[in-house]
Length: 474
Image (cartoon, rainbow, N blue to C red; front, side, top):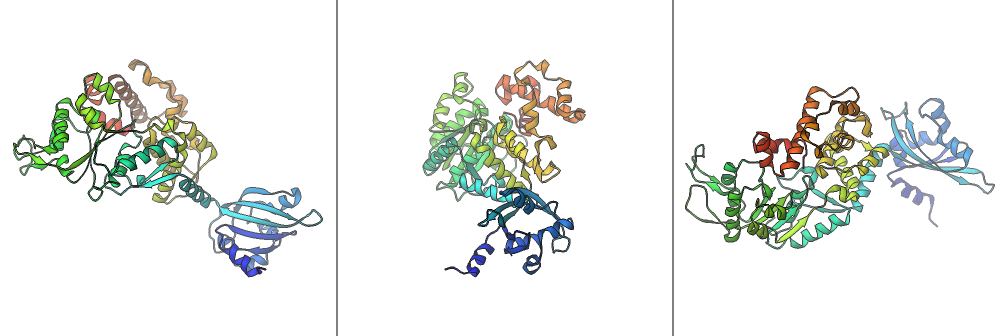
């Protein structure tokens, strides 16, 4: 038979605190984790009765009394403040207290398992992480640190990652489609990271972020003196910089028509010609592009070349919006929560109410909006328990607003709505930003592209892009 030393060794290797009481509340056994939690020695604790903690107000109530009286297991949070221990601060832990009955049917002993509150979130995160299909991508300067892991629980994301993994080794064009904020660049990084070109950093450009007159120079480069303001030494373009690597063109649907033909030639011939040069350069690159609108529709509307579309769409990958893969919401939220807890040295957890609201919310800004919401929650919540009513989150504002994006522009400004949302009302800056956000979203919904929206609003396309990114617009 196994001796007492064996069982004590086993219990001492459990990360949770464990203690055993007799029917009078005296400690019969404590493991090492429980000793560490309370900051008292085993010798001290084994000479203690739990009622001594209660009488000195070092615990707020005695769990064992409930178990003795009701003869049932009790699971409860308990606040502990041991004044004569090595711990200087009070703490809260979860206690699962279970009765052990004697032959007479009375409670003979109590065995309790204790877990600190901050550890619950860590274990929950770890469990969700192990349950999720996680695929690590290669670190890259274009990739956010907290997005080095792709969390995929839903069948849709698992299938997409499987296809991405299978085609990563083939040097063919990939078109990733999906709404803004779904993680198109992360998928592109994954494909590049699992390809034979992974030793070279993937080159990234957002086609909507630069004016048309600069985009050509950025993509293809230019010779010295090619245009006013050009560098005296000339400049290598991003396609040329992607030699032996991958080039990721985000929002390729915003690529101006004149450049579409030039890009098509570069794809077909694997050559480029710098602006202001007659020389032809060979470039070995793999193209991965992304779009947040239906390119087939853009082709029908003559805004996108059909021949370029078919050249890009060799391997199509479509990322479903977050509202269509709700299984990913909580694992992603916990992934971001774990990251921001570490980043800001916090130990915050979501309340059940917050988790329920997150799962019921449609997340129009997709993963980007969820990530932003989690960071704001960690930074702004007053306590370690993140309760959504305690913060002014993007999620709250989106979920409670009316469908103003579908109404006329004249109906976008309606002060009473903000009084309902924020009680006393927003600051002037908050109100102006909300008006700006909704007006730009209305323009984007109406005119379909950032260039057309900018023309309609009498501003620059780059100004629209900055605000689109600021407000997580689709």
